[in-house]
Image 1 (cartoon, rainbow, N blue to C red):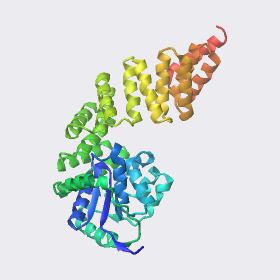
Image 2 (cartoon, rainbow, N blue to C red):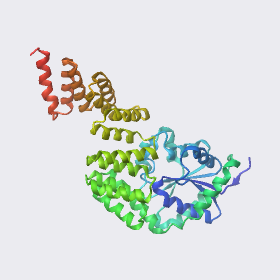
Image 3 (cartoon, rainbow, N blue to C red):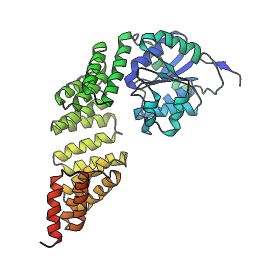
Image 4 (cartoon, rainbow, N blue to C red):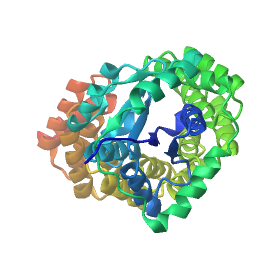
Length: 402
C-alpha cells in the first residue's frame, strides 16, 4: 500500500476540556483538515458506533490529556477509554496532547495495563500562552507525515449526521484566550482538590468562572469543594448554577442530592437522584445514595431495591452490601442482613461498622458466641465504638447464661 499524507483528524477529550478541544478543531479546520469531535449529543446509545466509526475513518487521533482526563479510565465502560482503545486497535496515528499540570506518571495508575502504551507515544505539550505556536508544531511535525494504514470510509448512512455535526462545530464562536485560561485554572483547582486544599481549589474554580461565566463544570466542581468543607448551602448554590447552565448535567444533580442528604432534606435528595439516574442510569453511586435517602425516611423496601440495582451495576460495591444489610436488619430479616454484612466484610476487612452490625444481627438470633467475636473484631478496628463495647459485655453475660 503506498504511503500517503492524510488530513483527517479525530479529537478525543473530556467534556471539561471542551474549549481546548474546540480551539484545536477551529485551528485545524481553518488549515484545511477534515476534523471530527463528538460533542454532547453524540455520546450514547445508537451514536456509540457512529463515533467509533469516525476513529476508523480518520488517520490521526488526538487525545487531550489534563490532570483530570484519565481518572475514569479505570472503568471498562468509560467513553474516553473506549475511544483510546479503538484508536490503538486500529493503529491510528495517536498524538497525546499534554496540557497544564499533566504528568503521565501521576495518572498511569488509573489506566489498565493494556493502555499504559499511551505513555509511549510521541506527545506534544500545548501551553495556552503559546497555543498558536504549538498548533503549528502539531500540523507540521505530528500530522504532516506519510502514514501506512487502512482507512475505513464513513458508512453512507452516517455521512449526513457527521456532516451536520461537523458544520455545527465549525459554526461555534471562536474560542477566546480567556476560556483557555479558565480551563487551566479548572485543572489547577482539580489538583488542589486531590491534595485536600479546598480553599485553594475554590479560589481557582472562582477564577475559572470569572474568566468563563458559562463554565458549568467549574460551578459543579466548586460545589464539591464547598461540600468537602461542609459548606452545603454554598455547594447547593453552585450546583443550582451548573444545572441552570446545563440541564442535562447528571453529576450536578447527583452532587446536589448528596448535599441535600447531608442537610437531612431527604425528599429533595431523592428528587435529584431521580433526575441523575434518568440522565445516566449506569451510575451505581446514584442508586446507593438514593437508597440511603429512602432508608433515612424508613422506606426500607425502596432502599433495598436501590441497593440491589447498585450491586447489579457494581458487584464489588462494599457500601451497598453494608447498607442493604442495615435495611434488612431494620426489617428484622437478620439472616439476609448477615449475608450482606458477610459480603461487605469480605470486600472491606477494615469495616468496623459491618462487624458491629453483624454482631448485633447474631445477637438478635441468640448466637452470642458469634456476636462476641464480631464485637471484638469491631473494637479491634475502632476502639471508640461504644455500642460494640456495651453489647460485647451483654453478649458475654448471655453466653454465660446470666
